[in-house]
Image (cartoon, rainbow, N blue to C red; front, top):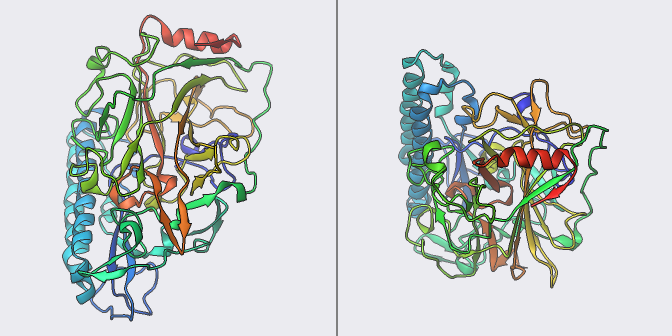
Length: 515
C-alpha cells in the first residue's frame, strides 16, 4: 500500500518476511475442500464444469480477495456500516467453508459441485455485500472505487499454494516452490466419504477439525539456522527507557470471539477466541465511553488498555468449553485452550528519536490473520523457544522445542503514528513501522512508545511421524486459514487515566526502566 504499511524488521524479524501492511479481517479467505480434479488442471484455475475425475482425491482451496485492505478512504460516518458489511463477507466465507466441509462426498461424485453449489453462490453474495458497502460510502458523500466490485469472485488453489507460493525451509520463505518436507501423507482409511487420518486428521488437511495444522507446519528449532537480525544503531536523540505493565496471563479466562476494532457491533466478528488482559469489559459492543469503566487486570490501575490475542490450543483429542460454539469447535478451532505461563507487556523507545505519548483510544493491530489467503506481506508473527529467542525467530512454522525449553510468541507493534487519527479505515494507515535500518519513522509520522509482548507456553513437543503430526498445537484463527503459524496477530487499544500515557513516554525518553 505504501510507506505506512511497510513491515519493519527488528531483531525479532526473520529473514523470510518482506514488507508489511494490513491485518485484513474483512472479506478474504481460503476455503478447503476434497475434490476430484482434472489431472491437467492448473494450480490457479477457477472451478468449472469441465473438470474430470482423477484417480485420487486432492485437496483444493478457494481464495477470496480481501476487500478490507483495499478500503483506505471510508468516511467516518460510513465506517460502522462498512465494518458490518465486511463482517458479513467473513461470515459468508465461514458458511461456505462449513458447506465444503460437510459435502465432501458430494464433491467426489460431482466435479462441478464446488462451482455450482458453493463458489457461484458465494460470488453472488459477495457482490451484493460489496454493493452495500458502495451504498454506505456514497450515501455520506464518499467516493467508491468501482474496481472493488471485481473482488467478488473467488478462485481455486491447490494445497501447495497455501504457503504463500513458497517453499518452507528452516522457517524461511523461498520463492516459487512448494513446501519442503512435505505434504501431509494420507494415513487413514476411507470412511463415509471422508479421509480419516491419525488423530482425526483428514487426508492432507490435518488437524482434529480437518483444517490444520499439518506436519509441514512444524520444525525442530535446533535444526534452523540463526536468522535474527541486529538492531538499528542508536542516535544521540534515542529514547532508551522501558515501561513494563503487569496485567497477568488471563488466568480468569476472560474470552470472547468478537473484535471490537474490526467488527464493532458484530457478535463473533473474529470467528476465533481471544485471550484478554488489561481492560475487562471489551467485547463487540464496547466503545470509548465504556472503556474507561471496564476495570483492569493490570497491577497499575491507571492502565485500562486492552491487550488481546488469539488463544493457543493443544490438539490432543481433548475438547474445551467452546467445542460446540461459534468461533470454537463449530468453526474449526478445537482442542484444549492453553493459558500462557508468562505474559510480558513492555513499551520501548525509538533508536532514532524521543517518543510522544500514545493518544487516548489509539487502536493498533499487528500481524495478519489471513496470511494463508493474503500472502506474507503483512505477517508479523514470531515463534521461538526459550534459549533460542536471540538466534531464531520463525514466522511460517511452529517450533518444536527441545526438552526443557518453552514455546514463545512475541509481537512488536507499529511504533509510528500519523499524529492525528486513533484508527483508520483499514486499521493500518494511521500507524506505521519505523525504517528497519535506521529506526526513523516515515515523513509525517511521530515515534510513539513501541508496544512489545512476549507470551510463553508450557507445551509438550509435538511428534511428526510418517507425514503426520501428533499432539499438535496451533493458534486460533479463521476456519479457512488452516491454523498456519503466520496467521498469528495481536490487538491493542490504548486506554489510560491519571496521566499514565505521559508517564510512559517520559520514562522512556529519560532512559529509565519503569513499571
